[in-house]
Structures are given as C-alpha cells and as structure tokens.
Amino acid sequence: MNTPRLLLIAALLIAAGSGTARAQTYPAKERMRLMLDIARFRGADDSTALVEFHYSINRDALTFLHDSAGWGGAADLLLTGKSGDSLIIADRWLVPARLTDTAGDRKGMNLVGLYPVQFRAGIFDVRLVARDRANAGIRDSISVRVPVTPPPADRPAMSDIEFAASIKPGTKESPFTKNTLDVIPNVGGMYDEAQVCYFYLEAYNLLLTGDRSDMTMTTTVYDAVGKEVLKRERQKKRVGESAVLVDQFAANRLKSGTYSLTVALLDTTKHPLVQASRKFYVFNPTLGVDSTLLSLGSSLPLAVYSTMEEPELDRDFKWSRYEITDPEQAQYRQLKGADVKRKFLSDVWRRRPPGARELYMARVEYVNQNFGMLGREGYRTDRGRVYIVYGPPDDIERHPNESDTKPYEIWTYNSIQGGVEFDFLQKVQGSDYELVNSTVRSELHDDTWMQQAQQVN
Image (tube, rainbow, N blue to C red; front, side, top):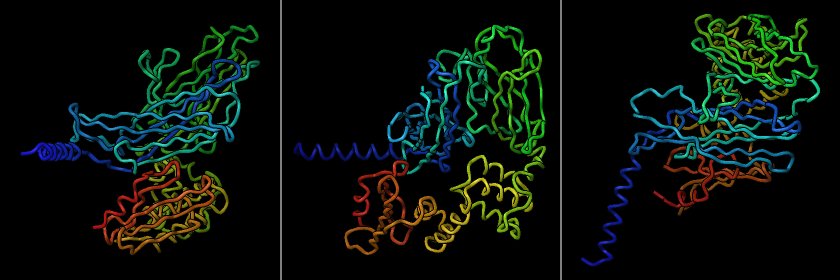
C-alpha cells in the first residue's frame, strides 16, 4: 500500500474519531437570559468611582461537551463601554461551567460574575453580550446608560445598595471579596420565599465634623405604594472615616410584589446623616400577591385590556416576550385572575414611552400573519423576532429559487449602527428560514454562512 493512501486512511480514522467526540454533547435546554446590575462605590481617589457590573447567566442555556472530567461548557462575554464616541471599555472573557453528569437537575442554576471598572464623572453607554461558547446562536445582550458621579468629599455619602445571595467572611481567592467580606451578588434583586435578602453598602466621610458618637442604622422596607412593612434599628460605632453596612431579613415575611429598601444612618438626635434606596422583588406563593401591586400607576387598566379575559391576557403577555423584562415576567407568572393581570400589563406598558405597545403589537400582528410556519406563530420565528425588535427592514433581497443555493433572504437596515444586515437561510427544504448571520454586534455572526447556502441537498 503506498504512502499517500496510508495517510488518507489515517486522516479518515482521525476524522471519524473526532466526529465521535463531537457527538458527546449535552445541548442547551432554554434560551439564554442575561441579567446585569450596577453598584457604584468610591473609587481610587476623589475624582473616580468604582463601578461594579454584576451579571448572571442561566446555566441551562449553555451547551456542554464531554471531556475526561465530565461535562464542560462556557459563556463567552463581551463588555464594551463608550463615553460619546470614545471607547472606554472593551474586554472579552469566558465564564466556565461544569456538570458532573447530565442526570442531575441543573434547572434554575445561574452563573454569577463581577466586572469592576474605575470611572471618572460622566455618562457611559455600556453593552454586555453573552454567547454560548459551543453554539454562538444562543445569545443575549443588555445595553445600559450608566451615570457616574464620584461621592462628594465635603459631606457624608453612601454607595449604591448591592443585593446579595449571601454575605460571609471572604477569602483572597474569591473575586467577590471586599472589605474582608465575600458578597455574592443577587443579580436583579429577586428573592423567593426560601431565601434571605442580604444587602451590602458603604458609607463615607463620617468624621468630617470630628463627631465620633454612635450612629443608628435603620433598615426600612416599603411596599409598592410606599407603605412601611418592615423596619428595624441597629447601633453602629463611628470608628472610622468610612463604614461597611450589611444586614439581612427573611423574604418569607413578604408577599409577592415589588418593594423598596431604604438604609439610613442617623446621628444621636435621630437626624439623617445619609441614606440610600433601591427596589427589589419577592416571589412568595405561600403568602400570595401583595394587594398593593394593583395600586401601581393609574387605578384603571388600559382600554385595550378592559375587555380581555385571562386567556387573551396570557396571550398578550406571551407575545410581549421581547419587551418585558425578566423581573416583570417572573411577577406576571405569580398573578392569578383577569383583574390583576389587566392591571399589571397596563402598568408594564405605562412604564414605556407613549405608543410603545401599539407599535410593538402591530409588528407582532404582521409577523404572525406573514412568518408563521408549521403551527409555530410568527413571533417565535427568527424573522419574526428580528422584525419585532428592529422593525421593518429598509430592503429585503429574496433568493427563493436559485439553482445552486438553498433559499435565503438578506434584510438590510440602513439606520442601525451605520447600516447592518440579517441573513436568513432555509436549511431544509420546506422548513422555516433561520438566522445564520448578522452584522449587528450583539447578534449571531458567521462570515461563512454562504457556504451553508451552497450545500444544496
């Protein structure tokens, strides 16, 4: 047997072995849900602020590949930040995850991380994109505008409140350790009835007047209409220029609903020195829904919801998946009864700009009529999602019957990021068009997508 043939056989054997390894895949079980929180603390000097970006990714959205240690997966994260047209941050990293086996239930597990940045005063546009390392088509992104003002140096000040899943003595190895404490973020500030609501914040400039008398730290929780539902006081020694403030309370004491936490420091005369507030959410099916949730916003539902029954309201909620936030979705799923749901959906859209619901639902109606496929409603298809999120394209280039390619479409948007496109391919004859490439930074990108189109069945 000649040498070239031996090499060919060896190559085929290697390829066959590689194919076997690639087949050992535990695919993603749900869509990716990226969440992002921001906590601002005093920076390295008086002119800066330390901004911590806390993020979480649902582990069930990752694809796991088998290796000698079990099953491994990872989220690929890209963080960018701009001030005007100037790029301030650009970083990319992997967040690894492991499974010992696939038999155990991994649902509900999140990968949590922290990314700290020192900022000077200004307003920054920050975007975080997460992708499944093994399947770039599984992705999510969040864009936020972050105003940064370093804490004042001439009066007492406080950092933002950071909600936490746990707070315990820290170690040097943990990325979550600060001021000797390991503070694991609760991204989104959502707690169920089995959890304890921990929180962390810092106070600064406490010795400006030379007063070293004890302070009183008050922890107050208000419901959705500002009614006090929990309050307690603790004495706090004024032993230094700054202080770390931590506390906790059981979430099972609160009904399902939206709450505000206010933390304040009082002097000996009970006069507030400084305080900070932040919203959080509780989901407690045992105690039910806080009745004040119905009092948010206007007392009447939007006219469009006034005659809808519960199945229609649930359908409206389902169609709104690309607009409604994760906390809002979690709250809605706790609600029972048409009256409550009418009020809740009305408040959701009242928090958006005027006309937002009408525009959104007009797009849903269009895609359901034009992109539905084999019993799947149009809003659930790739073309439907793109149309709802980005609007009608400026141009559609259709190629339904090319002799040398599978059917494909190219959608062009001229006013997004200086001009972008989305490429959809019908991979299997008679099936729906799938998104295979886009030049939008947060979307799936594959420069070789045309090679897939040319692989005609």
